[in-house]
Length: 112
Length: 112
Image (cartoon, rainbow over all chains, first blue to last red; front, side, top):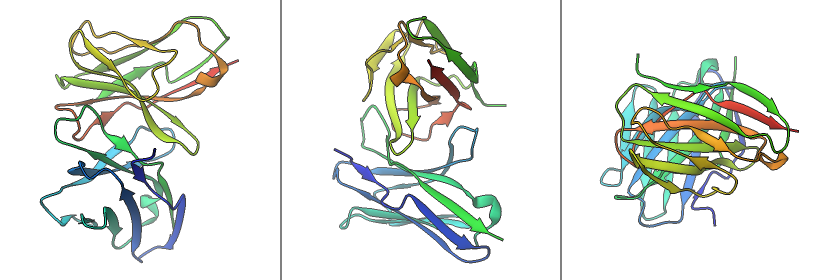
């Protein structure tokens, strides 16, 4: 039973345009959500997070939106840069839980 | 520099030959965990530890052991590796469970 779903295995966008990566979850107990970025031959690195008490969190070019009623979150990257090309993982946790639950990842390619 | 260090980065071994992948963090984090990443399956948690001498199973613990004798170290032990344990392994640590985790650079294991 996959609790965190990233339904798009890959996404390709042009440099300068917006990248939108989507993530759906099924567990209504999740109250904290994170995005990680992973380059080849490196470990995942934390990008941005959002608590369920918010519906938006922004950090520079990266914004995460949370729609609790739809159990959906998205990561917006504006403007996209070639260096953003990586695999992006969505993750979720619930208060008091022992672990982060990860999605399968979306490979973003930003073309120059 | 805050980091999680895994060794080795690459390992090829034969079926049944015991091996240990080491993991060390310098951030005084309580929480550490091991993940494996496989194509199409994302990151799956193997084991986690909430503190010294406190460990528990994650989603895919079969065939693995861990120990947490010191706060900074969390080795992953494969007593009798099998080809289905060929994977990319990541160690991670965090100040609390379920929040932003720092990942090591990964260990690519091949069992032949």
